[in-house]
Image 1 (cartoon, rainbow, N blue to C red):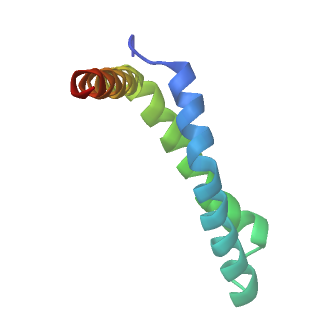
Image 2: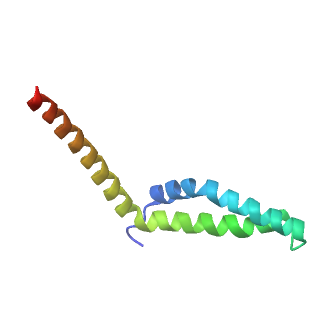
Image 3: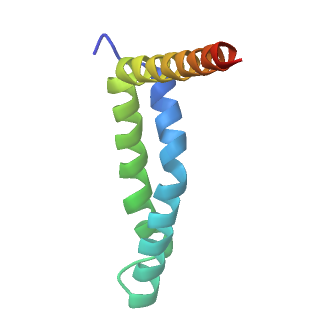
Length: 91
């Protein structure tokens, strides 16, 4: 895909990592305790797909993420400017 963005792929994967590890830990522990397989197999069955999907999402939607961040910063900055302007009008 021409508009893929590797930076956002890595960022979204990094953000998803803690949740993926927690889910993988739960699945691996359940599998190990119940005899459905080893901890490592159960953990990897969850972590790897979550990380791959998160990275793909970031790559595919990087442009939208960038636009959203820029718009959010613009709104915050504009709000701060208006707030300071109102303070000066009141005084």
